[in-house]
Amino acid sequence: MANDLYIQKEEVLGKGLFGSVVYNGRLDANKVAVKCVPRYSLHEINNQFLESLWLCLDHNNIVKMHHIGLSDDYRLRAMDLCTTSLADSFLPNDHPKKYRGPRPAQREGMRNVSITEI
Image 1 (cartoon, one colour):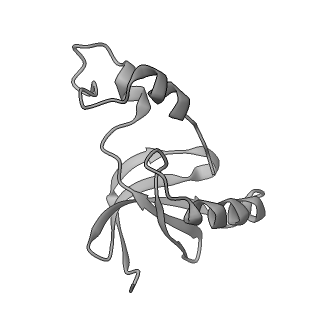
Image 2 (cartoon, helix red, strand yellow):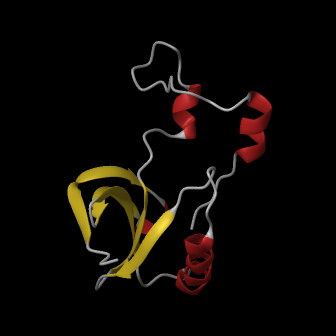
Image 3 (cartoon, rainbow, N blue to C red):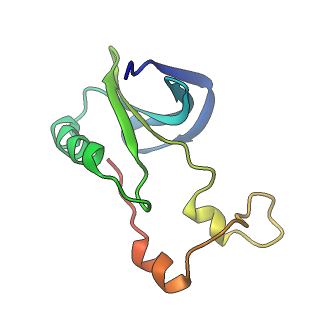
């Protein structure tokens, strides 16, 4: 696999902790989300360990990490591009961003909810 990563910096999907920004991107021919985390932070050593674990995870309820790379200033994480977020499920019914797609049964869905910030 060539792992050619292209970041569309004009398309910001979100911003996170410690100056991280998530962009639309492509890994080879696949659409991905690319999280750019400042490379030199207090959390870098812990992040490298967690990233190595995240690359190994393969489960339907976990966003798949496909590639980790480095630029001069950032750690680049290419992962599945999600069409919605958990928060969109709780918007009012008349809100235009309200998620209306398929959902797991309530008990199954609550068992699988997990929030991880790496």
